[in-house]
Amino acid sequence: MDIHTKLIDLSQKKLIEEIREGCENKLSANTFNSLYLWQHQMNLSIYLKDNFFAVKCGERGENTWFFPCGEKKEVELFIKEGMESKDFSLCYISEGDALWLNEKFPDRWQLMREEESDEYICNIPKLLDLKGGEYKGVRHKVNRIQRENALTTLPISEKTFNDAIEVVSEWEMLPHHIGNNQLVDGGVSNKAIAERTQLDIDGVIVYIDDKPVSVFAGFKIDDDTVDVLVGKCLQDAPRGFVYYAICEYLKNNCSNYKYCNLEEDLGIQGIKLIKEGLHPEYKNLIWTAVQI
Image (cartoon, rainbow, N blue to C red; front, side, top):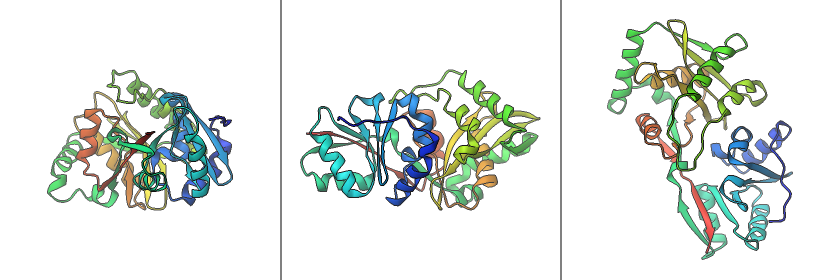
């Protein structure tokens, strides 16, 4: 498409969030913070108007775009124009937008589920209570960790900033599985913590015997939901420590929200098992689409 896109920068945050909230798009993938922080790893750039934005995803192809956000007439015009160009395709399509695309352009698109990009949505009050049979395994791990360790939880602040960066940096040096989309953190968490004030991100560091071993941080998606953007535990943390750490983050930062978006599992089995173990209430299902 012959459309000029720009890099995503902090000056666009307010407008992008107003547009996203205006069309009630609740995907973590379409939040300003996610787009801004992942733009280099995913080769993202943005076409931004007063009532509409579309994000080009160069990592997936020269003419591949996130499903646009904004007024429906603008979305329809953009897609119509795109369909006249070579290799135009769409990604990060929500369930509602997939239905709209089929209805508006019948027999023109092949929609495909992309399960590794589904976003896990968990109930915060249930995670904080950890009651009932479904949480038995998590509850056992959390209780054991509390019983066997000297634990401290502190907010990420100027005072604890170096500890947070130490955990994230040490985590990045570990060998990791790479997901189906070939995405790696690559400094995203470091940037999120370093620019937490501008991005309205807050979080916690969990210590064992005064040693920082875990960092969790996130931001508001809407009045009901917080996005858990950063979640790192060091390799030598006790087994199951991720469950204790996320509960500490939710307890200290998210008690006024109903849901937490734990983002996608990237098709990595270990991440999938952890997120499924938290018994998500539902998922934001994701599609991709190519023209027929």
